Figure 1: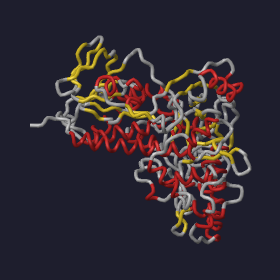
Figure 2 (figure 1 turned 180 degrees about the horizontal axis):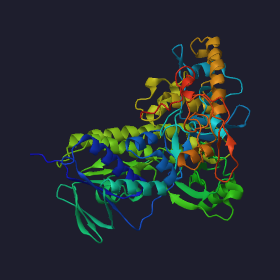
Figure 3 (figure 1 turned 30 degrees about the horizontal axis):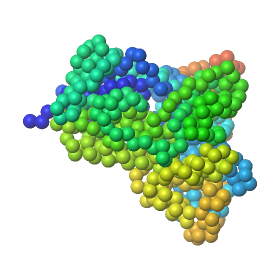
Figure 4 (figure 1 turned 90 degrees about the horizontal axis):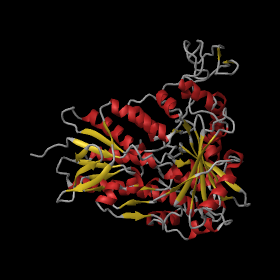
Amino acid sequence: MTKRLRKITIVGGGTAGWMTALILEMVLSRTSAPKDRPGICLIESPNISTVGVGEATVPRMPVTLRQAGISERDFFRETNASFKLGVKFCNWNKDAKGNRIDYVNPFAHGQMLEGLETAEYFLRFGNGDRDFTQSISPHDDLGRMCKGARPLGAPEFEQRFGYAYHLDAVKFAGMLTKVCTKRGVDHIQDEVQSVELDEQGNVSHLMLERKGRHDIEMVIDCTGFRGLIINQALGEPFMDYSDYLPNDRAMALQIEHPDPEKIESLTRSTALGAGWTWRVPLFNRVGTGYVFSSAHRTDDQAADEYLEWLGDSGKGLTPRVIPMRVGRVRNAWVKNCVAIGLSGGFIEPLESTAIHMIDHAVRWFAEHLPTQDIEPALRTRYNRQMDKLYNEVLEFICLHYRLGNRTDDQYWIDARTEMKLPDRLAENLELWQHRLPMEHDIEFVSLFDHRVYQTVLLGKQVYDTGYGEGIRDRLRPLKKPIWFHWWKGARMHLNEILRTMPDHKTLLRDIRGELKKPGGCSDTHCGHAGRKAGSCCGSEYAEPGRNPKRCEGPAIVLGRLGMGRAMFDTRCGAAI
């Protein structure tokens, strides 16, 4: 009789290991009785530190935390988290006059107007001095004004707008460690000295430095770039992506907020000479880094360029250099081992997909949970799903480089002309010269649907700078009054949103429990407890070290403005 797995061993901690433990425990405890589900053990070296630079997430993250029963308030306190409404791309492209283009890829998308995409209307008619993102969502304006993602006093995880988080990756792993061990995950702090295989090539046991032999039924490799089990022990080939993506190194620094009271609710990606920088504003500091190509800059040259970009914020600091293994193992599941996180693969962090891919990898493994026989059909289907996920992310990242138009450095010319394109993306780019991306153009979607592609193409202004020449004349007939009638109403709602949403720092203090609230109303404008929403109490609330503010009204309940229905669809569109 086939036996169920009795134990799943995770090797490696950090975000990958502990996210794996969290989601496995969450899924298995909900779907099976205690006697039927395997125990979870995590072996973590006490001497290996985590990479700890993945500090931005995507909108699946709030869903996972909520499903796992983790308090959002505790999460914000313990990880110094902030809200992320999208990514602002700065200086990746030049407009028709040669000026830099800055645009936001928001966690939102346009909606249908009379059965047609808002992107089509925008491409045909434009919208004055507002770009596409500013026309279909409030995210760009909220980020620019350093506003938060929801009203004060709103319930945990309330999604008035599509949002994700910025977080301290090291503190996040520490929080997950506490949560998982409290829920019964066996945490072993020890060094793996060797990985032993049986006659069929499966991992039979690990030899640990202090505890000795550790028997294996199913093992998950979360050992990072070194791939201790999947690469070193099982010999699974690594598929290098250097032909597709130019960057292979990064350097990182943590800096202070220039103005601690102004926290942008966006991640920034700014193009430099041989790559791009990230800027991730947390509650207490800013995480920054430079992702670059070693074929175009030495470490010293890149450091000089990076520190010059940081200005006074980087004075006296020495960035930490991080070599990147960009690519993936051919198969994530080999024999009785599944590689998750950096051991399975890594695509540069331009769209903050690392934790998103961990999340999917673990959930899919739980769906394909084998018995002790490690059924090949389950393994084959899992690997096929992971192949689709990697291809989805690779294609979207390649898009940013292929549609760049900078010529001021050889790096940008090479990134545009010398890098290979995945076949499906090459076919789509030929198609999109004649029409905008449509739903069925994208074969697999976990995060990047056709509307996200629309946002990037319109954000980069590619149809004004030589790509798809004459496309406006080839668009299907559109009625101009439909577009501008819609925008007239949308603009009124946008103004109300911007007027009523709190500043980001105040919202974070509210969630962390640091605002003094001496009673009053529960209105979405001021967040005070005790009165009916929709009426303003006029009471005062105080922030630490600052003078009291008076709640002014009348406030409005944004959920009644038609958000997500009549005017804007501010959801992210991700498959969550």
